[in-house]
Length: 480
Ligand SMILES: [Zn+2]
Image 1 (cartoon, rainbow, N blue to C red):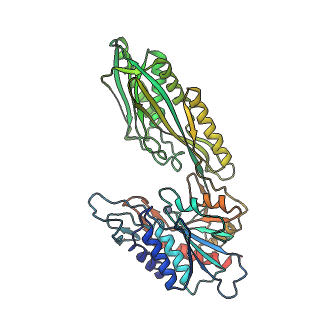
Image 2 (image 1 turned 90 degrees about the vertical axis):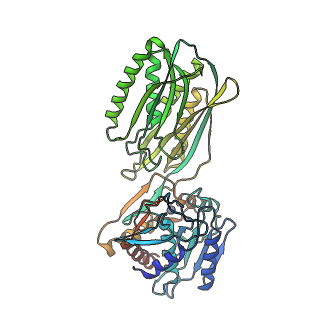
């Protein structure tokens, strides 16, 4: 497999355990490796490793370029795999054009980025100006390294982030994000025996990532459920007994359920309405093939008091969800969005309970993200919720004037005879944090093609490694 040096380093890296937050072994490996090769290497308090290499002769006047990857990997395995991720190596194999691992994530996210850096810094045939290689810690579970990096640690003018997953695509921007959480203390009251309790649920939606998939016509289970609650509360004397939906803050909720109660006389009418509703939503979302809705009788002795129950239903319907605005600079890029991620009724002592809601807002423009959080908070506060919006993480605003991008596009065209796609993503990247701490740093992100990342199905398209290698080498030669 070529380039041999890159694949040799990748196989060495895969012998070193490196789960997120447990990077001690890979840090030590990088430090020793730099020492063996006579490369200047420093590690900051957080564990980010920076290697420096002087320019090749005649290239000393060029600006410094940083090559960057993250050293941790997501450790997922199949249920029959017995690996100990803290001690055992990743075992890889070749399957046609793809490289895979036996029962585990491959670690090409972002081990292949690390291997590319190590090959660039040691291959004597690569011509480059002053070079820095940054390896960050714990990208996958908190962007810990990128959050903690200090201004001045790197000195480069340009940065090539090697953590993207589609060869032929160059990323020039990402979204920032923050969660807005809301809580409302509610009083439960006795449910009269004149009411008939019913459990309704919406389940098995596709869901997806709340950034990347927010524009893909994926329904939000909580939103669908809330809509039915509103319609039913308009027609019937509806009591809200329970509501639960969603799980992860960064996922579009795939399931939601509520227990409601209506007067006995209305129970058949509610069933008819629910069937009508179910056929409406399955028509609207006819691509949700596994969507499953159900309604069944249940038991209950308490419900939320009428006034608060109505406000909760209004709030869940009023709160913004999905794409809010598209970018005017980059066609097809979602600029601002929000995801209603979860709602849970939590029972407390006696007749007390709370409704806890988690939402998350994203935007490639920081002030737009704030505006979106304000909109979400306001809808919830009108219903009496207390809300807090976390600090979140910053976005990386596309810079259409980027000199690095110009060189990257030009070299790509001259090597491969075709245009690369220039894109931004509606999710977080470490570049967002770098752009906050190193204003003016000119950055792009790209890498070989990976599929199934973060799962045991992770695989690397072997020929794209050489393409990315050639592209990096050309950029380093060309950039001033
Ligand atoms: Zn990654």
